[in-house]
Image 1: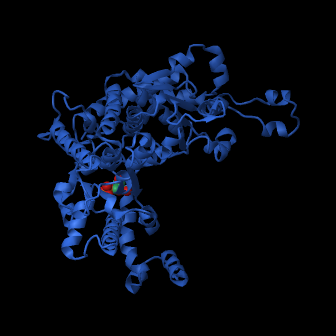
Image 2: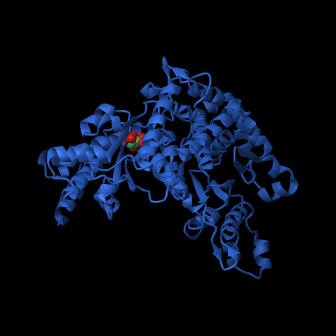
Image 3: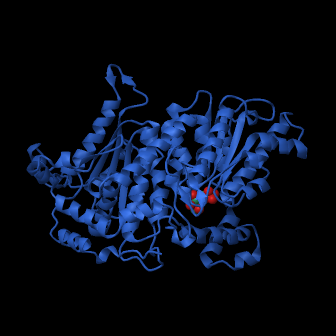
Length: 559
Ligand code: F6P
């Protein structure tokens, strides 16, 4: 195992510490004094135009940050990941989500641990596409001979957030007459509401679980199976005996998993199961067979374009010098804000309604990856790690939490994401609505950067204590990401961008961004507490006083 390099011991870190000591950011002055700043700091990333100029950095700081990436071995670690080294040290696994989007004719083939990864990926992708085509053209039929109209993906975490986010983003590409729904929460409300109005004869369930052991997903899969059996029997579509039930499952359930034996044990025919591999992390899996629902509803071509978008970013990261490498630079900026300017969170604010689930998706990607306090060799981290990612689509956020970003006491770096051409170019009378939306994106980034001085407030006639209340300090850092339109390729590029930002931060902090041991304790305790809340006195007695008291409240109020 290559030991992590302690970022805090590098000369680049010492430089950054010195920059921090005398740091007095002044975006107004920087812009006034440097007409080339915007051009220098606006970089292309495939189809994306990324404007970094409103970040709180000088050229000197940026160059020390790039030096930090060099001294901590970001490029070498990226090569190690691409080539299949087991950089997921705690699980002794390769990390090869980038292989999921290599083109079919990539040469030479990627062989890892004696396995032709490209061949494996293309085989599953071919199976996914063929299945999707079969459903889309009506070859795949339900138990009564009807074709599929609704796909219900049952999964959680990476087996849900990616598919639902992409579906929301690319809905304009969905095939007419086909829709998808996504059930994730074990709160029975989720399943009950998602089943509402569904016709079992035209519904296809996809049980998506990498491990096929996840409590929420298996419980929901059983609920869906029971609903299918009950509703088909009630309408007389099946007679309800064991054989008819098995037949119903065969026509209405497929699965995506790395554990195909467990899929079979659930009653799903292995020929209707789509595999992937332990080298794909759940939160990096939307471009694996976990995207089956997308291939069905949006079509294999759209799914292929999404993968091409990811791959374009992988290539950018691999071939672009660090000083122009957009994901690396954005990761470095995040390190600057976290470790030198005390930022604790990072907002992602899409000015595209279709990206409404993007912040939620990023929360798993970034926080499950980098919320760690030990490094990949088991030693403690030497500095703060993962910040909190959060956000809402604009302009909703403007009327909710932007007050705190503009005038609060905390530094909150924010990424604004917008597209030039909307999917739905509606008009309000003669007025295009979308430019009004974009004016808000531009206004917010401008206000955050340049603020409003007390003199400017006074010049408008305000006096006394109100002046301070109406003053905006500015110097709130933002990155603007602009794209021509939210195409499948652009979406793949956006997701890939954030994957590699996350990777860069993880390498600098020396952490394994690909395990998630922190979610295990809660899962174990839920299994122990389940009998306690269902009346088992011994299990209840084993709980702490607060848990016992909460269970007593539950008992007392249960109707
Ligand atoms: O929450 C932990 C986690 O393991 C995630 O990493 C994963 O995406 C999710 O659970 C779902 O896991 P699975 O796909 O195995 O059901």
